[in-house]
Image (tube, rainbow, N blue to C red; front, side, top):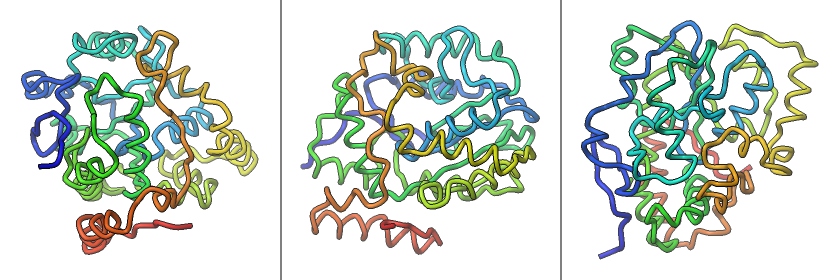
Length: 306
């Protein structure tokens, strides 16, 4: 039997045993998030899909968006409501506690982010009573699988003791943090512009970042001039961000000098097609059979090469 990452499944999503407990998760504390329909902008992604790239872009385009929790001066990841903060060391645990206690103190308009599947969003949102602006970024699952695996190498605390082959199987089976990539993407795909959800892809951002920013500006009803867009594209290209991770370290609860996650590769290659340097033929065939074929049957157009 293949080795598995210790954890549990709740409402179709996998949670690791490290950092979570079933009772905390079952209490659905994310419902404590009081959505501000006219002000909140939320970037939603599966792990390693361009989250901090988009946060940097948005905060550069709109300097009035409030990105940091006042109590900790760190960016708000809404799914930290599900953490068991007493089990997490360092600045991360402190931020999780502060988030529960002081999110309402964060001034509008707020820029937030989240990795959770749609079914964990607050009931008021699911019922259509409160609709914030959501930007959902999808990235091809093979590159996500690779980037996620390297990211987890900096998490000795999280108990992810899987080799690459075991990781590929766990990823396909949805037995990784945040569950199945396919379920996550297809779940959020149910929602469109009529629900205040804009869909973009990592590959679109790599191919023509300016065009994506035009879509985002139109979606937010806050158009920008060509000059402003060009300036942000130059400042916030992935290549520019990769030369220094100061944005990530400045805003992430994972990134200060006291963090237990300083060994994490926050921004890696950001390439489309790096999966070819990792997948064996047998692993690629297995992955295509279990994810690619099913995704394409649901109408997803996956870009594995550019």
